Amino acid sequence: MSEPVSILFVGDVVGGIGKRTLLALLPGLRERYAPDFVVVNGENAAGGVGITPKIAREMLAAGVDVITLGNHTYRHREIYAYLDDEDRILRPANFLASQPGHGSCVVRDARGGRLGVISLSGNLFMKAGRAVFPEADAALRALAGRADQVLVDMHAEATSEKVAMGWHLDGRVTAVVGTHTHVPTADARVLPGGTAYISDVGMTGPRGGVIGVNRDQAVTAMATQMPIRFETSSEDPWLNGVVIRAAEPMRATAIEQVLEPAPGVV
Image 1: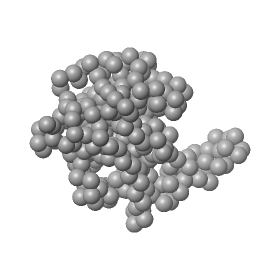
Image 2: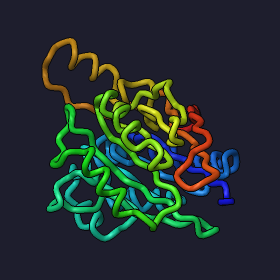
Image 3: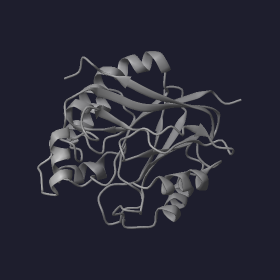
């Protein structure tokens, strides 16, 4: 019988307020859920777009095991070399092989359990260099025999593409979690083959904005159809995540949403 495993996955961290929300709430979430692994999508952590080595190091130092990214991976040039050097930060595996970084890794918990993490980007309405479904299969083959559990972050716009990926990998990975749209969906479940699934985990950042952006700026841009310089909102920060539990390799037993307000964070 395998040791039970729990994985806390935190949805897209948006801006400085998102990072502060994560760092403020993570100790309490550790006490409540006792996760063996913590995986965080840091796609929007640097001012709302991308991530920097400094921010990534802060997250890792706080006990985050793996950081996944997405379409804003290369917004800050200083991250390029860091993506090659640091195993625990992932850009989508279906980006071009010539681009900096890597799309999967394996980390161990205190008991020696092995978690494989795969980062993917959707193709619909997104800019990824390679088709996501065959690259998901290739990334999974590369992890064969190296991981007891595998979590896949499917960073995609279209819910249909995320749902299809869930079914495609059902029974072959522990979890497929959707990110990118910043709004948590109500379809968390364990699929028949034992894969935990949710279309979008949501975001960690200011719910008082428009998916993290200052709401007045977002509304003005949509109403006037004119260019607007967006800034990260600071109103009503929340942490959105999921806790996935597994009792056997590659078989989830439960997925629970974590929707946590952080009223004291500014």
